[in-house]
Each structure stands twice: as C-alpha cells, then as structure tokens.
Length: 328
Image (cartoon, rainbow, N blue to C red; front, side, top):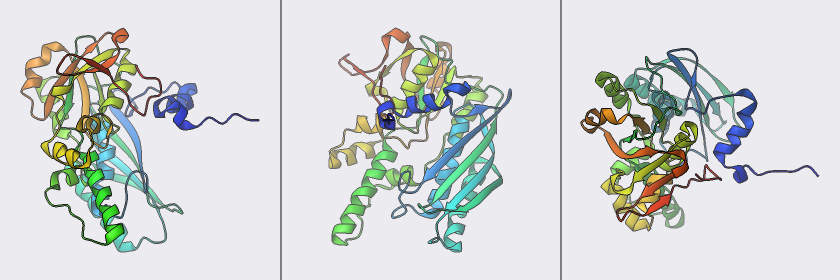
C-alpha cells in the first residue's frame, strides 16, 4: 500500500523544503532575478485567507496588494510592478469585481506600484487572488545573513490583526445565532489591522536614508515565532527575544482579556501582521533606536543556543510555531 503522509506531519516549512529541494531554491520571501531585482508570488483563497461575510471587497483588494508588497519589502527592496490574477465564481457581479479593484488601485497609488498584467478565470471554489510582484533594491537582503550579536528588530506592533479576526469571528457567530447587530465599537484599530493592513514601506526607505543595511530580513505574516525560526534556520543561528520588548498594542490586551486569549501567543503565532523582522550589526544601535516604527526586541546568538523568548524573571521559553514540526 502506498504511504500517505499528511502535510501537517511535516509542517509548512518542511513541506515546502521537500517539494523544492531538487531545485536548490533559497528560502526567502522573494526570488532574486539579478543584482537588484526581486520577484515574489502570493495567493489569497476565500475560506482560508479571508471571509467575505465580513471582509469588504475594497479592503480585500487593498490587502492583496499589501501582501504582495510585503514580500518585496522583506528583501530590503521597493515594490515596482505587479500582476493580479483572479478566480471568480458565477456569484460575482461586475460591480463587485470593480469594488475589489477599487481597493487594488488605492493600494497601488499608496505604494507606488504599477499594474502590468494578470488573468481572470472561472472558479468553482470561491474567490482566488494571485499576485506576482517585482521590486528593485540597491542592497538586497536575504534571510541567511544574521550574525552572532546582531540586534533583532521589528517594525510596528504584533497581534492586532489576529485579534481583529477573532473579534470578527465572534460577531459572525453571534449574528448567526441571534441576528443581533455586530458589536464592533471601540475596536477600530484591530479591525483596520485585519481588514486593511499597511506594509512598512517607510521603514525600508528610512533604513536606506540612514545607510543601515540589515544582515537578514523576513516578513512576519505567519507570526513572530515562525519568522524567527525561519530566519534562524536560514542563517544557522539562534536568537533571544525579550518578552517585555515585544510591541503589543493596548487594544490587543483589552480584547485578549475579554476572549481569554494570551496576548503574547497572539503576537507570536497569530499572524497576518504585515511587519518585518530584521537583524542589524550592533554598531547601528543608535540609528535603530531613533528610527520611527522600529523596536529592538533581542539579539542573535550561536546556533547551538537555539531560539527562545526570555521572560522578565530570566526564564527561557523555546519558540514554537505550527509551521515547524521540529523546533529549534
């Protein structure tokens, strides 16, 4: 009988490695075409990456472009061109498709990206949005360059997008059971982070202005823990992240208490935060500390020390992510 291995048994990272190992593909957010050009593909699937019961189509179009741009920014490059392909079911009208593209155009204007093509096909399983984004940069950065004593830095804050989704799912269930109106007042920030996230393009520009070239960089779309473990794997290093230095918005703590969710778990494994994790040499400590939208959360250590989070009392907790079966 032929062996059938479930993908979950390998974990996302090991599964991708198994598929691509014959091709010697580097594990990065984008592929390097030449010295200064990078290209990345992304895909959003209805029922997996978004729920149209609470996701406005304009916001979804914007988010699709943000996801594509984030992959390019994670290479320390600027997104320039994009193709967008759609799989549309018969239930979509022309007007709804135009609403989706209204959000696309808004995002393209914000990020300075040019739409250069795409494709449209029928879909029997809901809406599919596939993007290919091309970018350029003078100092392309991979995941594999982190060195011992480098500073660990992140942009923005974490956990808000995940908590925004938890809020929307809670209200969806409540409306389905009782028909009452959704109770979303006071959570605009969490909703915006989930439905209309913005990629940190200004930080990549500021790094170039300050002459700071990261040694390694990755996006945090799948959560801080997954990003940190991926970077450590590529760079053959370990890491120490200090719990009290992880930036978490006050709105996350408020809703987390309501829903009895650990806000730190939301930050580590929640995902959908289109932020960047990167490392810089210790000599750039001053520039990073004064850079808007960036926090230093730890440092790189030797690979045999593994990747761990340090609590305020000095205890160490090994980082874990559902993307990795064999943790560091």
